[in-house]
Length: 202
Image (tube, one colour):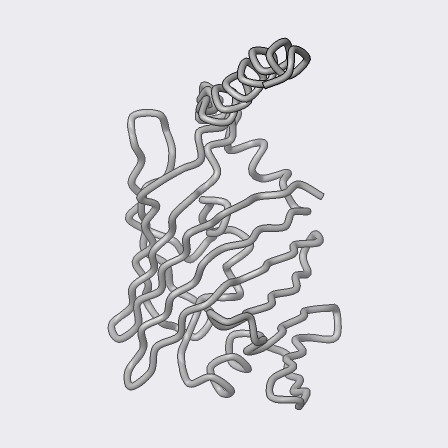
């Protein structure tokens, strides 16, 4: 070993250990906002993007993959890919209604939920999704339950297709908004699980 190597070796080791220490250091959890203030901020959150793992178990069928959801005020775009990254469908909403691209074909209807049900054979309360993704409820919700910090943990939802769903939030991100990290939805014949990997405000 040369003299210069001997001089540099302790410095390199120190830098390596410092890098390991900073990599392993966990993020400090933030204190959630008070319940009322949190609800107010969630209500104003109308432009966001999230990526999540999605699993659906329906009669005679099951789907697993990744979901990318982009919300722009009252309209949204949803991309669902299977576990190897192949696109299953792309759904877009606008003032003209809902548009779905699947298997190289384009389908259009006024209702995103009815269109998705027709094309895939499994239901999803997608019309109400901009709310329940954030951990909020709409006019058709009931049986609301909250944790000691005022975060919504479960509720019952009647969707636009008159299907009853039980929505639960087992886990939240450790940030001030306490955005949902895990969401489960169950109807009489379908179970949906979302594990959100990332939220991004637009």
